Every structure is written in C-alpha cells, then in structure tokens.
Length: 203
Image (tube, rainbow, N blue to C red; front, top):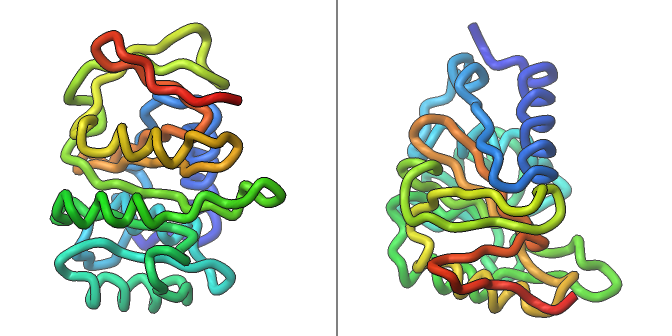
C-alpha cells in the first residue's frame, strides 16, 4: 500500500495542528509511516512532516552530514527549494547533526517581524524518543495548568529557544520527531520549567 497524498497527509496535518494546539501531547504517526514508500536518509516521521508542510511556495534547510542527498530527495518530493538557513521557513535538524551545527541553525533562524510574526522559521528536531529525557513542566495556551513531560537534549536547545522567543510574538516554533514515529510540538507560546527554573518571556 502506498501513501495517499490526500487522505494520509491530511491526517498528518490534523495531527500537526492538534499537537500545536495542545503542547506536550504526543501524536502517533505509525499508521501513516506504514504506507510511506520512500527510502530515506532520515526518520520516516521527518519525511511525513516535510511532505505535509512543504510546497513550491515555501523554503527549507536540512542540517545533517548527508545534506545534499536529503535536500535533493525533499526537493524531488515536494518541489520546495533548499536555501540558506537564515532564509528557511522550515529547518530540519537531523539526528546526526553536531551540537555546533544545531546551535548555529537556531541562532540564524528567522523570527518574523512585528507586522508578520508568522514569517518565522519552524524547527523540526529529530530525537531518539520524544517521551524520554529530563523531566520538565509545560504551561501556557492549550495546557490546563501544567503538564509534565520528559524531553531529550533539553540543555542543548532550551536556552537558544528562550533567546529566540524573548520578544513575543516574534520567535520560533519547535517540533520533535523520533524513531517510534511520534510527534511533539513546543510552540513559542509555551513556557518550560526545568529543575525549578522557568523559561519564559514578556508578552
């Protein structure tokens, strides 16, 4: 069975919207991955994400040791163009990316403008498991009170995320995908507490 580019990708899109509106909720992409007939150099969930959000009207950047091959594949599948990271609408940071490469990509990611805050970059980060790692607490729109979550490599990206989101509504939205075909969203409106330290910004 092959991926239905209408039905299956609409299902993935609804899951993306649900994950965004309910930060911390883990979404399962297993059924859609099972019908994905694409040989990839990245996680299957990453390709599903790309197929869902990319088209010729938007741009992307892939951070990986296999950038040329992965970028060419994504371009062939979506007709979206690979550009410099500072201009990219979507930045895919794959699991093999070095910390320095991730840091540089996040530092250069565009945050939009006051008149067009939506013209910011969306960061998609591959991890081994979105449900394992350091315990954190999330709060903000879409969350009733607080929700507990375990997240990987928090110290590698949380401070950079805070710096990018300091001037709300400017900022970046982050999505995490893993080997279990799971998806997790942390939009810019979400506050994170780690070990009693709260990361937030003025609104």
